[in-house]
Length: 490
Image 1: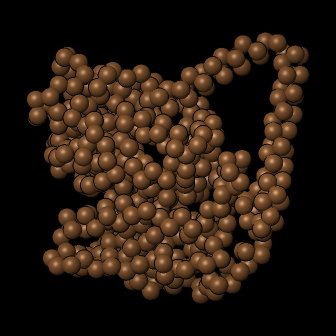
Image 2: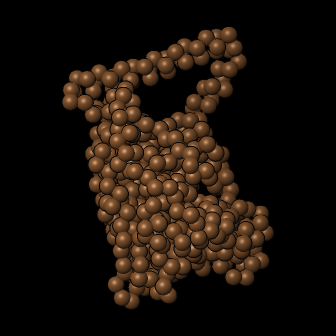
């Protein structure tokens, strides 16, 4: 990536991003993503600050806060924070003795749970020292409305290097950058209907004008479409069929799909608490086994998670009829940097009384995922319904979100990272542990493939899953079983 080129971001939140911003008012539905990077030594803090300071000139989202529209008439917009304080967003911590990995995981989980100051930009960096063997860590926490997992990794390129020893970035007068941005964007904010004016009448007028223009454009395109259909009547049937399929897909996504009562019977309770476990899997082994089983690495990843959930219940003598999971389909184009371009897709895995072989279970999960993935159109069903949900009062939308999230036993996400060795402020990256949002589900298993490994963060609601370490062990054993079925000895 060209470090000198500024990356563009939308001024206004998408409906999907606005939904995540709104439901976060309920801490049980915290949509934040985070990344814990283990380094071979502590990062050079001054160099890291310089990298981020320079990165802010390229990534305007890092210096922007959320400004609401007037009521629910328009989505929020992003505006430069006039009081931006880099020292608030980049912090330095040290683990107490003995500095174990468990201490680190517990620390970052507490940091993850802490709510954002919603008047500031929605990200925080923690440079952590005091790990065993002289290692260090960097914990980056970012609200999901800023970027999804892939977007966050692309944004991270501004402070990631391909060599340990690099030339420091050019000096940046951050105060001047902020001042210039404030002057340049005022007209855009007012035009977008942001609530920045002293006059509520002025803000309301601009908001309504914006929405009228938007609706007029939709009406104009619709009129043109009707004229086109009148002259080409054969296009009517495919159009109607496509609309019906989009509605069906939207309903399935919001409702979690058809669901056998119960789901995972041991994971019915929910709380706002979180617990983090870590797993690692050789990417080369995963690729070889998946190829032998005639599937993809993502098929293997999701199947391993499912095997772990089933084993967790079997160890405790509790039968399970169906497992309700989600996986993520990216709808991102190559031109997009940050932001959100994804849709969560529900998949229900029937279990019943029939005992399947490992190969049969792998085929079952892969086929179910393929069928669900084929139903994702355009930006996906979540984007299609988010605008409607945003019109509801917050108390209603959060209640609906909780109800739907409670139907999900295990959320999964697979993110592709750098295939080579990378460095951060002079320290080599050893592993990247993602924390995907639990957001009302029982647990989230997210993996990042980087430099030959699949590093996984299992973020659990410990009230739902009372033995997180046991579940992590079960999932790890599930991967071992799948590798063996694919002819790979771990």
